[in-house]
Length: 85
Image (cartoon, rainbow, N blue to C red; front, side):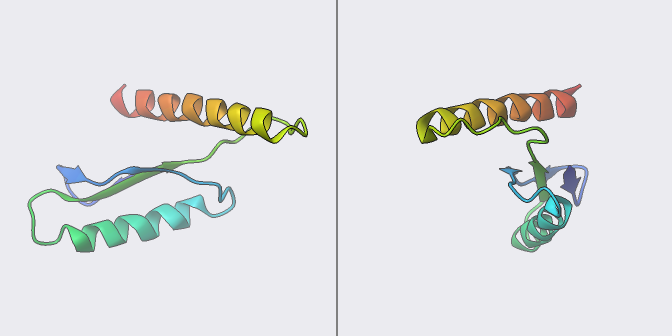
């Protein structure tokens, strides 16, 4: 999801862990960003994504953390590629 309040907008991206309501989370963040950017030319924007298929837990916290991070980075790259395509 990527929301913006203008042709030229600035904000950021969020990796959300709220699968059920990440759209609501991003909407709240973009509204806050719009307020912060109310007096400058670029409007507010915010993007966010969730990992739909997280890796299965192995029981080893270090391995699980690395696998989750790798999947998150892969999803981030896919998200950015979609925005730039």
